[in-house]
Each structure stands twice: as C-alpha cells, then as structure tokens.
Length: 457
Image: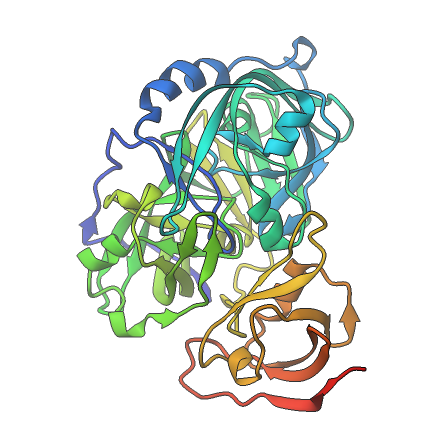
C-alpha cells in the first residue's frame, strides 16, 4: 500500500552512523543476504580503496554518451553481463550495498587475480565469518559489447558467493559496487529491466523525486520515517541496498528495542531458519505500519528482523536496510557526486508487500543450480501441515517443470491462493495442494493431498 506524503515530520531523529564504522558488504544467504563490518579495514580502505575508485576509465570513454544495457531483475537483484580482467562473460549483480566489488574465488583463479591483503569478514549469521581477500589493480568491464564500459586500476575483493547462486537458482559470479557508482550516474528502470550509465554532465537531469543520501563507508544511507503502531513517527538512518534480495526492509533489533512503540514484540512472526556459511541466520518478520521515504508513504511494509545485531547492524545508530522490495517500485537514479537518489514511480508502486506464504526455505545446489531443494520448513506453516520435509526436491509447480528457484519462490508468495506441487522424496513422488497463507494471519491452514504418497517401484 502506498500514498504520497504531504508535509509531515518526525518526533525523534536518530544520530548519524558512527565515524569509526567501516563496512564492506557481503551477502549471506537469501533472503536478506547482508553485511560484513570489519573495523580493521579502516586503514586498508583509506590506503587501497579511496585512491583507486575515482580513477580511471579508458581514455576513449572520457566523453562517452550515456550507455543503456539490459539488466534482468531477478528476485529484485539487478543482473548484467560483465568481465573481470578479460575473463569469460560473468553474471554480475549491480549492488549499491557493496562497499567493495566482489568476485568469486573461481573467477579469481581463472584469471590469475592475486590477493594483496586479507581480513576477516563477519556477517549477520550466528557464527558466520570468512576471510575477505583484497585485490589491487583489477579491470572491470560491462556493457552491450566487450569493453563498451570499463574501469581500470580498480580495487576489489575475493569472497565465496556461491550461496547467492544457491539462494536464487542462478549462477552469480561477481558484485560490482562502489567502483561504478562513484564514477557514473546510474539509472535502473526496474519495470523494464534496463540500466543507464552516464558520465557526469553527459545526460539530462534525472527524472523523479530527489532524496538526499549520505555516503558512509562507501555505501548509501538515507533518512526515512517509520510511523509505529503507537502513531509516533521516528526517523532512522537506513542503508539503501539494491543487493538485498526479496526484502523491502531489514530492521535493526537494537532500533526496535530503543523504540518499543514501533512494533510490539508479540506482533513479530517466525520465519524459516536460513543456513549460512559457518552458521545460521535466525530472524522474524514484522509489518511496519507506515514507512515514509521522501515524498512517498508506504503502508504495511514487510520487514525482516534478525535476532542478532552484527555486521552493519552492530551499530545502534543504523535503523536497518531499505531493499529491493521498495526499490523495484521505481526507476531509481543514483548520483553519488551530488549525494542524491531519484525515485520515479512505476506501475508497481501501490502493489501490496508480499513475503513467503509457504513456510519453506529453498536452495539450489551447485554447480548447476538447477534442482530446487527444501532446506528448512517452518513448524506449523502450510508446508509443514502438508508434510513437506527438508531434503524434498520440488519437481513441478502447477504442472510447470524446470522452474528456477527464484520463480518457485515467487509462486510461494501469493497468499490466499493454492498451488499444486510435485515433490520427490527419495523414491517417493508426492503430489500436494498447498494453500498459501501469510505468516501474519492467525488462521490455521489445512493442506489437502490430491494423491497419497506412493512408493515407486
């Protein structure tokens, strides 16, 4: 739900992010896949990153006109084809939340990228940590044809991102982040799946409502207002993250604890446990009564609330993230030079906010990322009542076979409808009608089996 705001204000304003917080964004598994915070990176980033980001396009690109390329939108993520150091074509996510551009270890090995330094990267999953290997002097390429757009002498990092592929059912090789946003004004048209890259001064003024952003630790933040269940308006500082898949918002539990009138603890609902490298992510879901972002007013926004506050959420001054569930309702222009983002509404502006209505968490194992497997089932959910179990493989959805995980997940978000699943459990084929129910509903659901499980000979 949405309405445009007229006037208004806030009663409480949160402070700015702590100056000593340095974050480089890494994705933990779907669906809110977020971030690392490494205070040890402070000196490294100052010496390595800030020097290289604003240099250097190729000489022939200095007066280049705007370039528009196809960028398919998958679970809200902006995908494009790119290369690193002359690699084979890669599936790249364009990501405002990446304080470093990231490549997978397999890509780095294939092109001979060598790490210059390393540090620990810690995510929001309990116990989840990995080593982040920093890169110096790499070349990023993307565009409609090889070399059409490129940045030379760039810094980045090597980090395992196969869990992103497994969480979407699409091979993901790299995240291009701050390097691109500091050099170009970037406009993503979420409705039509295309993105335009413009050098400063090479394009007309962006369309849409301008909203001030702050660039802190190489990622963009915006002030937004939450109107809570108590009717009080509270301003918070939010990381605006185009790489947070399938989520409109993530809320910092510390922020909610400091403002208990926003959302009652009893109104948080459980969600399936998400497995992560080195640990698991426990979180709950909440309905944010009202979110005000610039002139736009959204109602009943679904937000994820991680149980632990680590990574960027370790900073109590960060209220949370604004993710693709909001951004995909607009054509979004990022102008880091002038510290502005522009939001131009598209037809999805007033769509209701959805979340998984099955109780399933799905994964697609590599290296093909084609099979759709059940990773966990929320107790008491429609999927649990239907008898689905971890390890079951989903073969068809409403008779359609071969669907990638992200399309299956989309089908599981249509609360109030039913779908028919065919699943494989070892040698047994199950055919189940699955009524989809919002986790916020308090009405028990009953799953009806159309065909009793049979042991296939």
